[in-house]
Structure formats: structure tokens, C-alpha cells
Length: 511
Image (cartoon, rainbow, N blue to C red; front, side, top):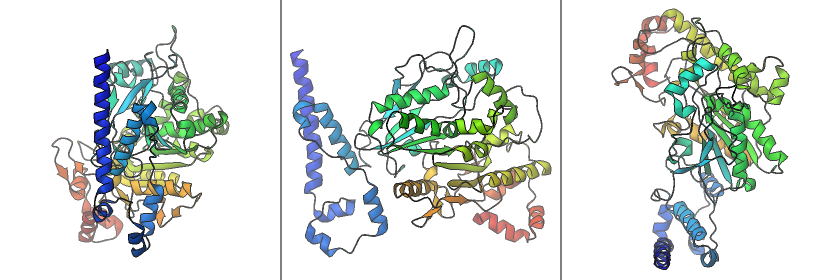
């Protein structure tokens, strides 16, 4: 035992020496080199010679997180000191510090009565950032099931969305969950929490598994328990809690963001700013292009599926929305109906040609070319969607054929897609800054926050991710894709009252 302790002590001292050497190299590097790398340690004389910093530079400095070092911790707590050293090293060398415990680690809930569908324990993944007072809690998506038959089928084919028995011990974050600043420049050093979706109820249920029920549906309770546990890990001292999610997780944000704010306030943590970020969760309760019987989650019309589901799950909706739709609480699962009742600020990210919406409406954009009737349906659907987002102050709305973006692969395209010259990552950063400055306009510091694509064709925005033929895997241009869908470019030009060559040029340029 003694030799093992000596080895551990030696290893700790060795690691400490390495980290201190890293700091020494940084602090003793030539002044000019440090300035080129972005270091802020400069002499007063040099600072006086420099012109005033630009607003963009001041914004980066003001928005940066600090990692104060407590050297007294060396004597009493080597582990805590090493964490501080790692955080500082990562802030100084963000692109080279890729091995510093960046994976999120699995924690099962201490309250074992809150479970996944099959009764296995629910849980969450977390990567703590000790120097940050910002928390990002992400709700996974994955559709739902709404009766015994659809849930049995889901359990056979997608068990990880109903059970935690085979969850890995760690997860690597991508997109807005990435710890890499080059991939996630504004949130990389926040406390990251990923809550796996294993309740199949759009994060709304509060129903236990019993001898008389086959499955538990506890999505709403899972969020509540995770927040309770995070309070013991530093959330109680947080400045910002961003509740984000994609697809069913995006709808889950709309259903739970006010609940989380009320939960924190009721426990005395009113200083935590709770915000929502809903990606690809703004569905419409419209009529399908082609009506089908409600046999499974894909063919069942959204309205009918949610009506059946909310009864089966024992689902809860925000109280203000429930009061607005007494007896028809299913309305609250649709963004444009629940949004006006919310108190918390919510940023909406949505796609004009959302693949999930089109699928449940029985419009399939692969395989056989679409017919003229289908194209008219798609255009009407897009116009309906635009109308529902018209009065949403914080929105990023593209014409891409896509579903989910914040944590998907390829993980960088959430930074690359743009509306009117503003990327999604930049828009979210502007929103973050506007809330810090207590500004509520839709345009702050030259960065608009109400961003809606104006071009009408699928993928006519050149920043949309590359389209690939699902059969061959080959990339397609916008024109190739339109022809693949069966569109007659000549006829489209006539409908718009323009020359076909002009339309082709516009499509090629993404206008």
C-alpha cells in the first residue's frame, strides 16, 4: 500500500511539473509571439503604443471565461489543483488540449424511481467546466411511440431509446456540445450535459411502470431530476442555463423550459437565467398529403399520433398552455400554439423542408420524382410554416432539406449554414450577448436575430449541406436535385415570369 501511494504521489508530481512547465513556457515566451497567439499578457508600454481595440476584440475578451488558480489547494487537495491547471491550460491552448478529459461521463439518477421506458435507470452525461457559470443541458431527439404496438416495435428496433442497459460510459460531444473551440467557439468551455432520450414521450410523461402497465413514460420527470442533481454540481451558482434539444428534444424544450425556470425559482435560484433553444421541433398539425391509417409512428398523422400519445404517456404540458387549450392539451405539442404561452426566452431553429415533417405528411423526396400535386403541397406547407414563424422574434429559418443541426454530423455545419450572411453559431452568440446586455430587439450589435430565408426552392441557399443521392451516395447540385425530384425548370421559370436561363443562373448561385 505504501509503495502504491508513493507511485501515485510521484505520478501526481510528474503531472504537476508538466503542467507548470506548460505555464512557464507560455509566460516566458517572447512578447510578440504571445500577442500573435492571442495571449493577453503584454507590457504597459506596448499597450500604450497600440490603437484602441476593435469592438469585435472587446466582445471576445469581455465574453471570455476566466479560470482563477488557487495555489493553496496544492497542500490540501492535489486533485482539485490539477483540475484548475487543466482548465487554465485548455483556456491558453484550446486547440492542442484535446486530451484533457473532454468526453462527457455517464451518471445514472440517484432517484431510482425515475426510469426509462423499460424500468432501467435514467441518467445523463456530463462534462464539467469548473471555471464557467454557463450550463448547457441538451435533450436528445428520436420521435416517439403512442400505444402498446408501436412501443413494442420501437423496443425491438430502437432499444437504446427505451432502455439504458447498453449506454456507453462516455460520449463525445459534437456541434454545440463540442469541447473544441474551433468547432464550438462560443460554448466550448461551458458545463455540458446531454440527457439521452429513453422515455419515448416527447419529454412530457410522468407515468411510472407498474404491474398493470408495460412501460414507464417519465420524460418530464427525468429533466426535473437531472436539474436537481446538477444543483449539487454547481448549477446553483450558474449565470445561464440553456435548455436545448433537437427534433423531439426540440419540442421537449418548448414543453419544459418554463418548468425548469419555475423549478429553479421555487428552490431559491432566481439568479439563474433559463433560456430555450429548440432545433427542428416546430411541427405543424396540418393534414397529410395522402391520408393513411394510424398504424405506426411514420404513417400516422401528427395530430392523431399526439392525441393518442398524450393519453398513453400521461403527458404534461405547460400550465399556461393547458389553460389555453383545456380538454385539447395535445395542441401544446405544436410549436406555434405553445410558443405564445411561454415566459422564458426561446430561440427557434427550423427548416422549410424539414425531413421529419415531410415524412409524416407522406411526402418522400427520394426514389420516384414528385408529382405536381406534391410540389404544390410542399410549397403550401412552406408558406404555412413561414406564417407561424412570422411573429417569433428569435428564429433561424432555412430552406434546406434537413432535420436537426445542433449536434449532428458533420459537426461543423451548424457553423457554416447562413441566412443573410449570418451563421447559426453567430446568431446564437448574438442572442447570448443581447440577453447579457438586457436587450430584447431583433437586431443587436449589427447582428439580426430574426433570420428567415427568402429564396423559395429546396436547397437554394448555397450554405445548405451537400445533397447526396441516397442510392448512389454521389453529390448533386441544386439543379440536379430538382430534376431528380421531377421538377421542370422551364415550367418553373414560366410560373415565375422569367427566362429559364436566368432561373438556372439564380439556382446555381443560390439566389
